[in-house]
Amino acid sequence: MKECLRCLQTKHKREFPKSSAHTDGLLPLCRVCRQRQVTAWRKKNKERLKEYRDKYLKDNVEKIRAQQRALYSKNRNRYENYHRKYLQTHPWMKFLGYIDVRCSQKSCASYPRYGGAGIERRISGPELKKLWFSCGAPRMKKPSIDRKDSKDHYTFSNCQFIEHRENMQKANRSRGAKK
Ligand SMILES: [Zn+2]
Image (cartoon, rainbow, N blue to C red; front, side, top):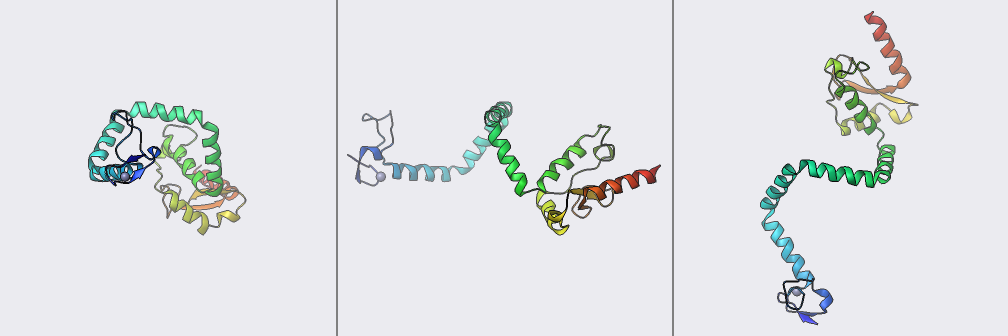
């Protein structure tokens, strides 16, 4: 048994964190008091901690990226399962990725009408969700994202979900019209 310096309660030695700096190998503060002390210190030094963390992140970009890659490949299956389940319950989020791929491939010959034409994604995940339900996408066979005006960006007002088949017909019509 040992008395805590802070709360003065006598507690079992198990209730004291280990500390090699002290002769009996235990901190003179019980776990409860120690936790309170740490929390108070963090609160008091919030700004400094944030600065320290930001600097660390900035100075170690490569290292952190490598760690994340390692973590990802180690837990690949778990991440992929999680992602798959996430997309099952958030199907509209798939389109965020589709749009980004189309728009980021500026030089890609298969996307001359998207990134190649300077088309950008200016619609967010929550906006896609709104469209998903307002367009009745859950009842569609194969929903696809369509820009009402194909020369305009992916924005909330220019986007709609329509049947994939319909979207293909529309694309063919507009290609035909250009010829
Ligand atoms: Zn205590």
